[in-house]
Length: 479
Image (tube, rainbow, N blue to C red; front, top):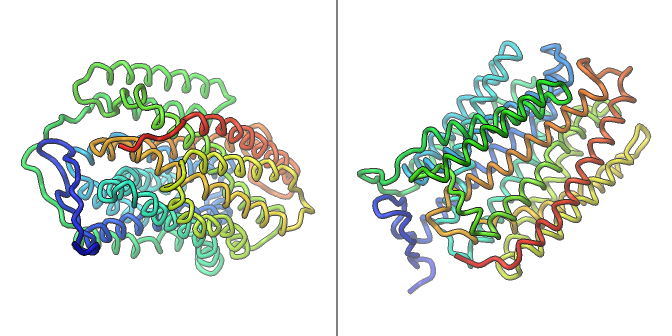
């Protein structure tokens, strides 16, 4: 049989519900296309907003702590809903949830562009995060469902490449839009790409509806999970105030109630047995949490450093910041394909070590540091993250059965977003400790530099902890 018409039979996700029964090469390409388009749009938004933050601060007259909340609110909403919506995707269909998510994300982007004040912008960012949670919990799951283990690493690598293209073009395009138009244009430009993605998904993906749903929706578990994430992350962002510690305790308490409930409910939103019995999945997810906790705030901090300390315009700042994701975009397909032939944990652990080295090198930057040092450090970080991300995702999706693909994608997405939120939370804590509720002006530049260096020292140490966690997962057994 010709390879281009080869049909791949998928395992049945459950007795009554599955999105694809037989998948040919055309369908596989369509799935990869829509997942890749979404993988381009969402990180483009995340990275381009960082460059626009100083202009947003000037227009809305907000301090450094509230400035961080423009990113944190989006991440928090995404983390809260990602696992529940990933489970819903397994029950009702990934294509349905994906299409709704892309639609919500696009509408929220338009609302962000039209925001009249900070609170309207934050509300739109929360809605944008909910849409993103529907996308993150389904895109990788759809890829894993149609590509067999021998092809999966390459497909995931291509998807990750799109993510890094979005990340790399975001700062540059965002800088151009911010400098010559307005920060509002950064949000508005996403709308056409979002509409295109929805149209491709609706018109090109073939799927089958199920007549009934076998599993019930775990509403109580979903609420407890979302509440635990909300309280914990709100607490982390308000430490060292006493209410911050109280919120963290509340988050831990809700998570304990969530765990207790999930162990006894027939159809849990999060199958905890997956963590107890699958060492590879557990440690790979933990490695993702650690890595993103250490790296996400890099662009946020460097954007402020380059514009406030080095005096670069938004366009030049974007050109500098695009070096890291551009390096990732070039190397991620190679790393993903390599993980199909070599044990993923070896490649991912090497990437974690290189990332830790790059983060620690950032601590020496000062007012007189040359831009070339920043560029070299960003290349090192890009190399490390490329070697970590695709192989780690391949290890996660390979370690679980197909019926858990949506859940696994939701879990690893939650680990990523929890890590990103924790990273921004750490940055917010540093701002509170070193700068306080004031705007970043020339008078506080020395304090900002101390905050900058301490943040990267903390991030580097966190990443070092992730190396043994990544190595300890052992050989991944393909499901």
